[in-house]
Image (cartoon, rainbow, N blue to C red):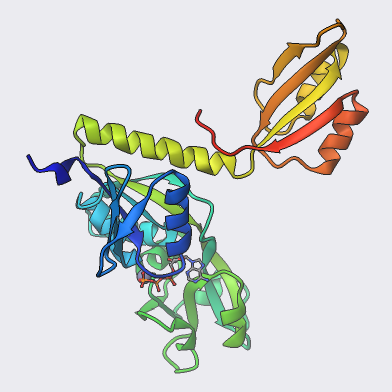
Length: 300
Ligand code: ATP
Ligand code: ZN
């Protein structure tokens, strides 16, 4: 029996902006890996889950072709691949499972500072340099603008200076690269962050169960990120107001207190950060002995 078939493969960026966060996230899910000498493969030591370290652009294809079961990649890359396939009349063979809250950036059109830009119509009959041909084409079609798309594989921001384009369409996070090249953002096409994608290929039951487990752990790690456990004492009659003030908590546990009928203890998991203002408001509503604790692990 080929045991590698029972193992799950996750595609992760080999070296780039997403690498450290992706590996950290998987480690926080309790996974431990040993990296191969060529650094292209990480063997899962404590679970049958291995990593394939690749260029980010290859991740959607590896998941679509069922070489990897899951992949962690920017939404910008996912959408570019999905739209590219759609324009060719081909089906997308992966699903976006959930967003991972890192690698935030946006795909924007930027104009040289001296260009007078009055709105989307300013793009009409102009040349826009990008490596995101499909996302740009989709944006122009949705806005019924005719413009020429000039493919640039890198250093897109120098295209206007080289006289190759009037505008550029590229990823922006802080905007400092645009600034340094005398460019300003004029349109945002996509807000992006790292996402996890899953193959659409049906998996054998044991693999499906393992994929379910790892997705559940990832979900738990993401939820824990901002979650806090709150404990407090409250007068029974203030319970409605206190429930209302507890941020992002569904059903707090209410426990009677020994020796008193009109006071209770309230324990709640809050799915949002708890600020000093919230504690002050809870105190003003009658709460006392307030404790806020970090949540280390959560499985819902
Ligand atoms: P590879 O060698 O894997 O192809 P790359 O050069 O295409 O790497 P990186 O620059 O490492 O990719 O970016 C990876 C992802 O990080 C992007 O696709 C995007 O989702 C995200 N990202 C976040 N901020 C930025 C930014 N300012 N510029 C580019 N990408 C960003
Ligand atoms: Zn890339």
